[in-house]
Amino acid sequence: MPTLAEKKAVVEEITENLNDAGAVYIANYSGMSVSEVNNMRGKFFEDDIKYKVYKNTLVKRAMEEVGGYEDLYPHLVEQNGFVFVEEELAAPAKVIKKLYEETERPKFKAAVIAGDYYGEDELDTLAAMKSKSEVIGDIVGLLLSPVSNVVSALQAPGRTIAGAIETIAEEGEK
Image 1 (cartoon, helix red, strand yellow):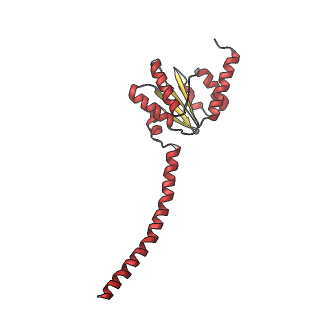
Image 2: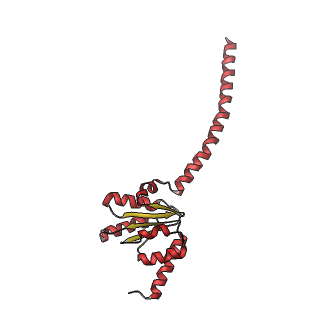
Image 3: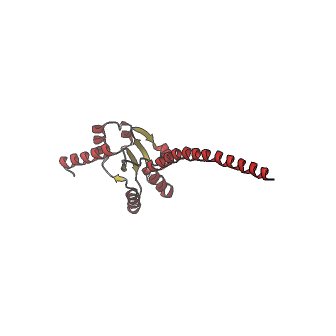
């Protein structure tokens, strides 16, 4: 049984993870085999996502210290894994959804992303969100699009005028 000092150290670690995270996901891993859990950990690791298993009571203490996680309290029952992510806030949802489609585990319970609560029925919505790099790519594409349209528009009249002059000159030679 962990000592009080060990529990405090774990609560401090969880508090630090909560403070650093832009999103926190809770997934129930009940019924998963050791190999399935290891596979899930590997998928999160590949995407540079922090996945941890803590006692629910310690997570609740840390969440109470940090504040803003009250909506997650009812989900702090059963065997939960906690996912902390700083930047690519939708990445864990994509991993959880893909694993769930393959094995029906883990079960997404809830998430708090940038202060907003998402329940278990919103996994598809979260998984469909674009990543930060995809959004930046879209914005760059939109910004470059008008520039290329302007350049084309400026070049087009020159071509038409040159074409018209050429046609007139050809008719004048006849």
